[in-house]
Amino acid sequence: MGKKHAQQQLTFRRAATNTASRAVEDDAIDADATEGPSTNLAETLAPRAKKKTRTATKKPESTEAQAPLLMVTKPLPRVLLLHTGGTLGMDPTASYDLKEGDYNLKEGTGGSYKAALQPGQLLADLFTHIPELRVYANIDVKVCFNRDSCRVGPKDWVKLGKMLDRNRENYDAFVIVHGTDTMAYTASALSLMLSGFAKPIIVTGSQLPLLMPRSDARQNLLDSLTCATASFNPPHVHLEEVAICFGGKLLRGNRAQKTNASTYQAFSSPAYPDLAELGVDVDWNHQAMIQYGGIYRPRFELDPRVIRIPIVPGSDPRLAYGDLYERGVRGVVLEAFGLGNMPDLPRYGWIPWLKKQRKQGLLVYLSSQCVNGSLRPDLYQSGQTALDIGVETGGQMTPECAVVKMMLCLAHPNIPIGQPLAGEL
Image (spheres, rainbow, N blue to C red):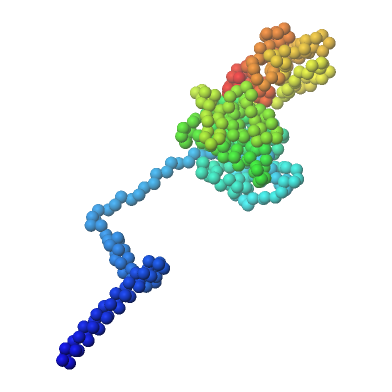
């Protein structure tokens, strides 16, 4: 009886123990469902995770060596950025002049812009403020000169042209930072001096300095590099001329004019279509672009003894200009009315004055004050008379390009001023 009672007691304890264990497990499951994972549960699952880790890191049965992962990258184009000055790099706090030479990275100057703008140390801030420039190309920067563009003239054009010529074989494209006031003159000069260069030369600048809030310098530089390196990226556009990139437009350099001093769209091409428009996409006008197939023949001689004369109603050229040839002038770009007309009254007519100047050797090119349309001086008597006494004409050129081309033709008498050299006519 006692033995049987002891056996029943042991059975009862085992059942109670099993019941308690199940209750603990049920409590743990309820806690997991209502309060989220606990430390104890994480400890419980740890061995399982560890086991899975051992399974995941098990070496593959195959002993063959796996091929390494290779990344293929294309080389970036080489671009030479030439700094000549202009608003883009100006700074009213600057009291120094950036000397010629290669670029050395220095800390930016910052500063306020309440004082008068003067040439500043643009290159010290260029890559600091526009680091993505390096994404477009491998860029080298050289200082050709650093001054307000109103002081830039024929000697500077020749210097800039020779620098481009020396580096022609070393770079894929060129970007020139320039002031806006005489940018059209410089672009025209480079297009004529470097006819057949066959590589992109993009001239750009800005209406506000790079360090000034809301400056257009950043976008103009990035747009210029986009156009300069277009042949390296789809759709692989081959630009082979001098162009001005400004305000979201790409214009032929010798067809462009500064037409607005207050907006970011400072330049336009009144008598010739844009080469490209830069928005979300770049809309290229392939039909308007020049593709050179001729021989590259640089010409670095310019005769600066040229002036522009707009004809004004009622003006007497004898009083206004006198004997220009005697005073050292050798070329005149005469801006006539409409198709090429001018006053021919005996009292203040231009024909007698022109006839005298032509006999002395003055070269006169007849253009129009109209920015659009053709030039046909032969349709009216005064224009035809001017042609009869030796005044030259051709297709309509911008006044900026006409002045530069006359300088070139005076220095190279074998080149007629009416002969197209770089799409200027």
